[in-house]
Image (cartoon, rainbow, N blue to C red; front, side, top):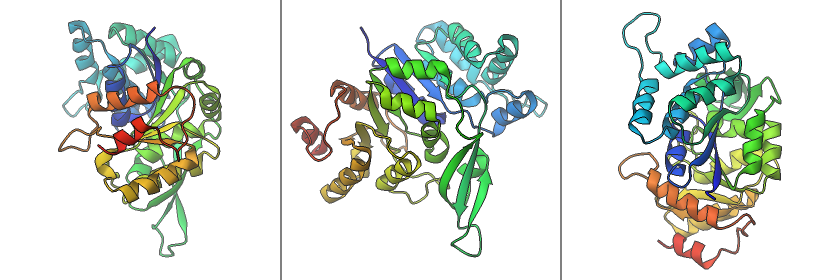
Length: 333
């Protein structure tokens, strides 16, 4: 039986993960953040009070079948209306999801129905059944550097010129989508990241039911770090800083593996430092070539190969201080 894999994230980072994972198995479930408040998604959630559809639409497109029918519908749902009227800027898929949600009165049923139209490989689910708002404590915006300002909204947090210290979800302690919990509990591998760290990755560990399921599942848990720091949200962040911030937001949360692009941490001294930092999550570090040359993007085939090595390592944690010969050979490439 093919492996069952769950990917958590949002936006372009999740699209990259799904593009990789579909190479490994048809049984891929995407669990998507639901706090987007910009562009078409922001307009639709404000006008119709729906779960923001943009990141969900992108995940559907990433998992659409390779048949001509699937390709056609993936192109259709990603197409944005032009012009300057009321529809300008709306992707067709966002409108379809909003309409299906009104008719079916269930965001999961709406996603499943559009998934059938796309001959979907796998399944796409919202992280929570309700729309959420991200709220952040941001330093560097006041004359006193010790002071923080509260910034609300995904777009505002992602584009702030200050330094994000901590993020929260409103409402607090939101419910997880039941089907997402079921998928995590049945998975062989769960992948978190890459993506916008504060607005697409960390929100998943702020949902208590999701964290509980992740810790209770027998699945191997992998964290994929971004290739580069993002302007605004994580400007100047090292690989270690990404791990520290995640650990601060989710005390007690652990993963088995952290996948890092080998070119990002080329020196052995820096790699040893990263391994020590990874110990805060009880994680083994998988150094691998996962980037697309000349771009800040993950290469789907390379990322798929790295995640397959992680999956095959088994469900038992690997000591972060005692790497296997196979892991050492990967480090030395």
